[in-house]
Length: 226
Image (cartoon, rainbow, N blue to C red; front, top):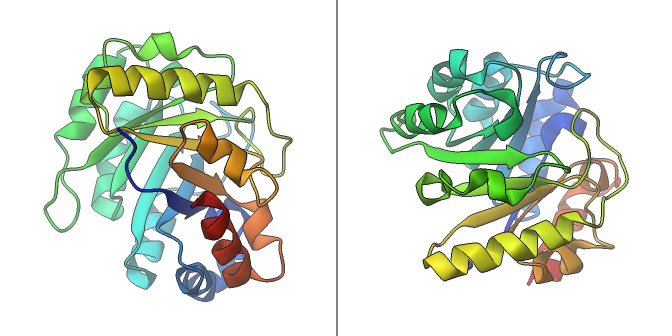
């Protein structure tokens, strides 16, 4: 059961000094979500931003804020991201010892406007989808990394498509309307291939914000996604 296709530009690659204008540009291009890559320099070898920037983004867009926590001990921080304005919170399977408990903690959170928080789990490239077997019924989305997380502009890892096909088949067999998101090395050249593998949410950073035409690239991606 595939839900509507969605484009989630990653502001990791945006000009954060012009955040308001950059968010307006992706809205103009028809983006559906804003993807926020939160990195701690520990779980991944890079630092990005925290709840303060999520709160700033919330002030300048009505698009859903899709917070991807690439951080160690995420259970300590999920409530802060909910308070900052997240609409969905995705944690890494590899970053917590008690994934089941963490999923339930996130599901119990509320968004700023009182809705239930959407909960997702992300898998690094080498982590099998079987690791989610016991929590999959509780998830709203699964984020499959198609690069090793930590830096933008990396080359797409092709076997991520096989993981997406397997996961979509599993979700369909359960009768579950699951958002399958993919992040890393995706742009106009391979967006259609990614969608064909069962992904319905594409994260794209460098290809959009480095294109010189943010709205036009978003529109092209949306067209290719169908």
